[in-house]
Image 1 (cartoon, rainbow, N blue to C red):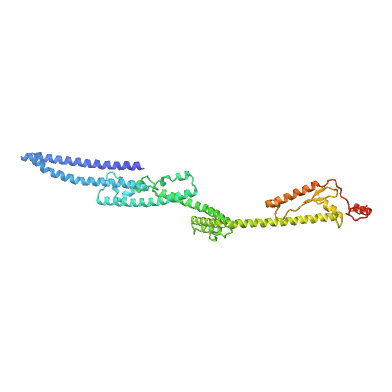
Image 2 (image 1 turned 180 degrees about the vertical axis):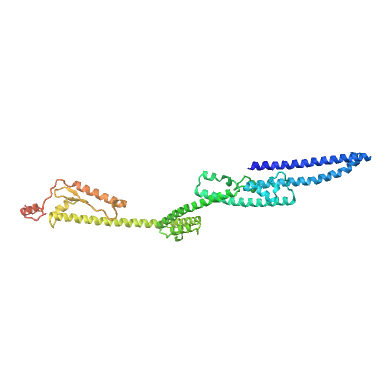
Length: 412
């Protein structure tokens, strides 16, 4: 389209120049005819020759006057053509209709009517000047508007990590960000369609940003609450999750500002955590010691219950008064009981309240139990393994024969 308009302008300019040349030729022809007629009359009257110096001096001022009258018209015509070309360039950049723009100034400027000559009056020149001023102001306003849109696009692209293919779609308008007004000459780059397309993209990315910012705000708020929980600090309720989501949905607050506020609170909470680190370490050690002490107490209670259970089994085997020798020689390790035939059978054992595997709570408790287990196994390894358990009835009969109490040395 631009090439066609340029060709039309050149044709109009060429046609005007030809018309001016033809007019000049006709004028010269008319002057020559009049001069010939004048020479004939003067010859008939016996006057001086038309080519004499006296006649040349008389004729020279008239030609200068004619040239002086033609030059302003030629200059005015060239000025009109320059204005028309500038209007054509501005209309191409802004995406406006060139024919309608110049027709509003004067219909002869469009060149639709070949027979109508171009109007070069003062009113036409003033109209073209006003049209150019108006188009330049419109270009300036659109450039500023488009620069604001492009700046928003770059900000949203960086925030959303938009792909390169999506950015290339708007490469035509992004090139004007660092350009001056005179450098913006690409056809249609400032058209209303291009501006509307860029505005729609900004609106789409803004909505997408709101949803992603909501997720980011919730994530950073969770981090803040976790830090405050570890340092025993109450988080700021002004940026609570429910309240923040409500503010973002209502549009009363900018998500970026809300996120910046939460970031500042996180930094403050981390600084407070560093200040409380020594106190928190001591508190953690104290809690660990309390937990270990509780576990040891529960373990001792379990051991006591196990000993009571062993004593109850001995009483069931030997009567109300257990044999001293049996009590001493058959001392069983934790978790073992006699089955009546001299062998040791493991007995079920309850875990402490502290957990399913209390040995894993502390290193000290684990090593203590392990050492006790090995000591008991060494003691059992030195005892005879071929003993036979004696029932209550055998003990009573043996005592009657030897005339002594059960469990006492024989008095035979």
